[in-house]
Image (cartoon, rainbow, N blue to C red; front, top):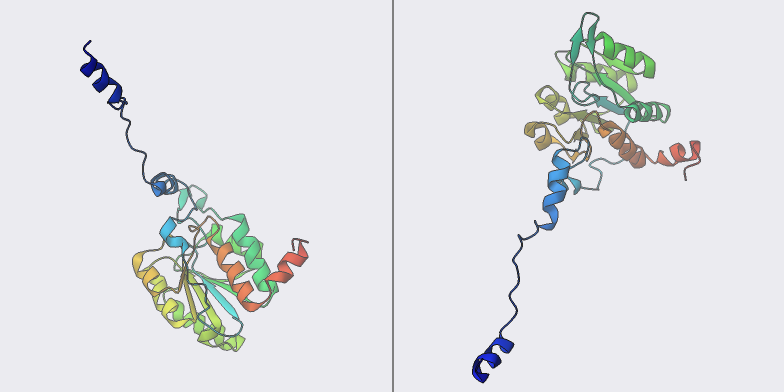
Length: 219
C-alpha cells in the first residue's frame, strides 16, 4: 500500500455500529405508571402544599364509588359487590377518633357498601340526589361552617358540594371538571389509597397526625 494511503487509513476515525437512542429519562417511568394501579403520573405529584383554610377541619365528606372504591361494581345472584382498600378504612377510623368526622354521601344504594360502613362505624347517606342538602344538615348538627369542611370526589355529582367546602379534593383519576374545582389532587388513584392520603394530610393540618404515630410507636 502506498505510504500516502497508509497514512490516511491511520488518521481515519474507527467506524462504529449505530444503536437506537435510549428513550428520554421520563419515558420508561411514564410507560410503567400507565399500567401500575394507584401510582401517580409525574406531573400530578407537584401539589400545592399550603392549606386553603385556617384552623382545624371538623368534617370530611366523601363520595363512595370511584372515591372510596376503584369504581368497579360487580353483580351476582346475591347482589352487588365492591372493592375497598384496607388502609383507607383504617385512616377513616383515625379521623373519626381524632375529631375529624368522616361522612360518606353517595347517589347509589348498596348492601355491600352498607356492610363496609357498619364495619368501620362510619356515618353514611346512600341514594342521595342532593349532596349539598345532606351536608348542610350534618353541618348544622355539628355546628360547623363550610370553611371547616373538606370533600373528596371523583365525578360530576360531587362538584356542587366541592364548590361549597373549604378544602375540595379530587382523586387522581377524577374527571377533569372535578379536578378543575379541587384545591388538591391525590397522588393515588381511587380505591388504591387516595383516601388514606387525604386523611393523613388533613390530620397533619389539624395537628393530630402525631397522635396516630404515637399510637403505633411509629415516631
